[in-house]
Length: 385
Image (cartoon, rainbow, N blue to C red; front, side, top):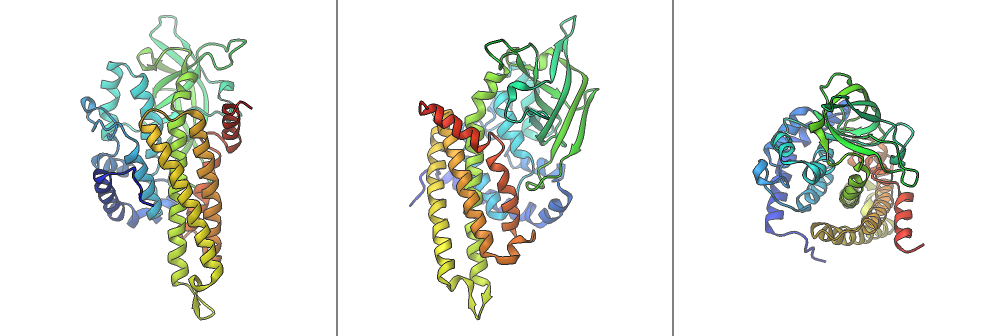
């Protein structure tokens, strides 16, 4: 079936991006994979390509294109090549929406030009040791100084994507105790400079997958955050976090779909070339049936995520619909990538082959952005159950 979500401009962007990946990423990716992080210089190149400013208003140096379709193409092209752009997704898909949604005119003038050029890389810090999906249970605190000029931030965060390279991090912290009937009240968001005294980056976490995307532990000891770096209103941070979740969950869904589609491509290329018992592995009926079943599942995931993409761009994607797309696409990707790895035999277990890296990278999709169990809870609630 012909896809209808992209037009000629999108496809032209795809070709430009594909050429960039082949020239600037593929030749060096094995080295980055071994080191467990991409070089900061890659972000400068992504900025020069215009990837950081796609949805930033023109007044602040961006292109002003209010669409997620260009990001969708990035998911598809990086997966197709078996590479990633490190933690750039946290910069654009996690942090930027809060700057655009909550930033004052002064804040946007201060933050966005450096955001677009990659001079300042951003990350988002919500999760804390021991809280997981229960964000209302966070213990990091930010207390207003007696003279009202700054907040004093204390606490710790973990699993922070982009935490090593970040120059600013949007940190969620308690500014007031929770209400008896509302545990979510009292959380605020701050744009914290990572070079502030008392701010420290702990371990770069050694992950199963997403090896080139730096993930860090952060700690704050009496960090002074100017009141001018409070994003939105005090105590309403949890409400703001909830507003961006549909977009974040669509991103995970589309990324998972792109990984599944790439897995089928990798598997087909492998079985067509691999000879066993004097014949290509692709000639066996089991191989054909396995790939055909995987292709059917990928087609279904494509339909789901494309529909969600159109709804997201129209401002109509609900929390339950985003949860449904994430649940379906991540579960499909899990099944498809596993079956495609099996078709590689022992070579599928070797990191030299992109299917092995995909297998490891894909696993977190059913955890971050809300676990599959949380997605089921959201969907069930929307059903009135």
